[in-house]
Image (cartoon, rainbow, N blue to C red):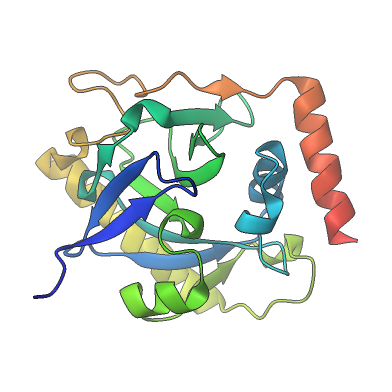
Length: 206
């Protein structure tokens, strides 16, 4: 019998969840300086970034994600008071996913480190190849297709618009039911923490 979901789990196993196998997904490999700084802020670079400083994510809608165990370990960090909400497991600093601050923008970019970690595991579960984005911040030269990036963006935006139109954006484990408030209060990095994270990211890129 084919599984009806993909397993979500942090490194230590205290936080577990599911991504519906019926969910439409888009695989991306983001090389932006913010994602690299985030890896350093969590002090978990080796498990998050690849050799080029990229983070592979599986982007889908939040309504397709649920947590089945240890939801109390779901924590939230942001690089600034207007930045993305970056969700992780506080028990072991495993990244879970990134969301917008506005729940009506109902995408979530699930980190590879909670979906099976290895490229082979992601290939087996989700097929296709990750679209490289923000490659100007990569540690090495990374081939990227502008057209592939555009198609990926259109797919994601289209799904968000549909969820907003039909109200399914309200079904999110990352925001409290009936409110627009995050399920966990975001911790915004202070200026020293932010400066250190970006400096370490830049040092890696050299």
